[in-house]
Image (cartoon, rainbow, N blue to C red; front, side, top):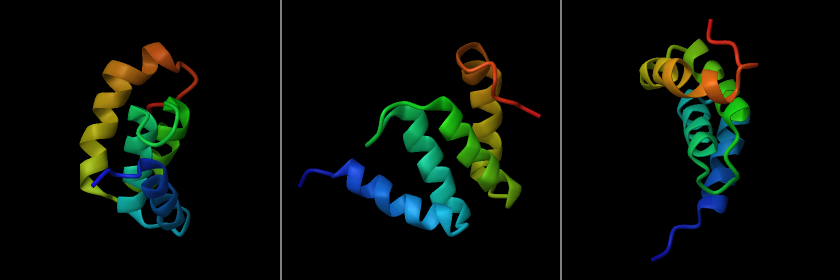
Amino acid sequence: MAVDYARAMAGYKVGAKAGHPVCQFQVGTMSFRGIGVDVDYEEAWAWFEKSAAQDYAEVCGWGVYCCDFLLLPIAPSVSCS
């Protein structure tokens, strides 16, 4: 069975907008990797920040990696503080 990533993203966005940190992390990850949507690093970082603000542990390590090694060269307007 094929996965409908665009539909999965739509579902995760409902949860993310409702404030669920796991959904926020998933939307960030899918935006970062271009899964079901076009790659959008600033969108990804915005969702990572929202998830991290709720102390979702997985995003804390992933977000630092993205910021230090990937986002700064690509999207310098993204704040890593």
